[in-house]
Image 1: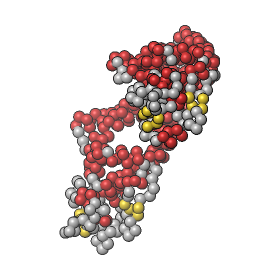
Image 2 (image 1 turned 180 degrees about the horizontal axis):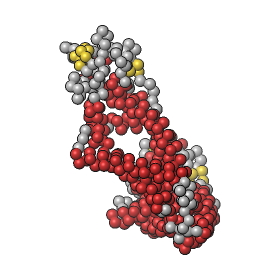
Image 3 (image 1 turned 45 degrees about the vertical axis):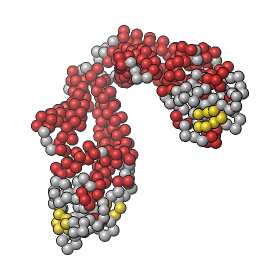
Length: 520
């Protein structure tokens, strides 16, 4: 007899599969037979949600019913992504829907709204012409203005209060001075609207038009979306609790160690594929810039290695193949040793180098002698500098300095790259004209520094070939590699944990590769 948790799990996934298939079928029906504007809007979301729900629930059924461990792990990966998605969407919804209250019309039974009261993202999405054309058609299809009538004795006080959406879409704005006839019919004054507002001109007594294209309707819709999203946040929390409960039931059906190894390698597999695809794209299309071309080989090699490494981890964990798991753990051990060696090496080559502060200036200047010889030999040699120089030009690192005047420029805290590449060395004695244009005074520079002759006011030249630019680049590498030290330490800790869990998974596989926890 199956456990209660297994039975409940199967029932939930069976219901989800039915709902997912129903959503897919309905979406296909709309595509083939057409429908209202609202139905057409829902077609693609329904199809995507339906396919996702069908695939995930099918995996959830395959796991316990057919005892396929790999299916259960794939199911849990999808559920983990869903949980993260629900959390992110809920937070995002709360952030974009916070707004101040609408202005209350003092003597009316409704409120009118200002679009500026709402978040910029929400305004941009609703104000988008294509989106609003669909929303306006949807409002007409739903007949939101039908059934609302005014009290004839007092035309401005509705017998039942307007919703915010109806206030904006089902009547002209009060300042237009239109005369009330009935709930959806208003007469324009003979002299025209009282205010030269576009909404006064857009009003129509046609039930399919009304004020659906007025700014007041757009504002009402934004407020309506805000209220619905706040309600959706509560729904999301309820769904999240349900999904977490289902995930816990599913989690009890697989070995914890195998599951964690499977999830980690599924994520790294996606990253490896993304890097490989990017590398192939640059290789086939040549890359639009020299920087992209220089990234082709590293992306391809890194992506391919991560992909193969992740495949081994997935096969070892999901298929309980101990030989593959042993190879996977051996490669990971080599990787751990490599990270330790690389971290020590980075520390040694970046522990030297300080810029010299220029008196009364907001920046430092750098010399090549300040850095480890290895860095100088491998990054400022002639062959590699051509590529680096091209990347610096393409990144427009000096453009942000272009509008500064002389006092502001010398007070700026320039980065090492900007200090070395975007201006001539201070000892050259050049006269400042603007941030990227300097003039030689008198017969020439007072210094014998070759960088003084190398400087050019052309935006593609500047001081990109100067020794000061090369040393600024070395200073930047030094700073970036110091951040890399911290990243390597974090990566090392994560890999140690995964390695330890992988060892546990291999021991579990050895005990009984066919055993499936939680099954009868």
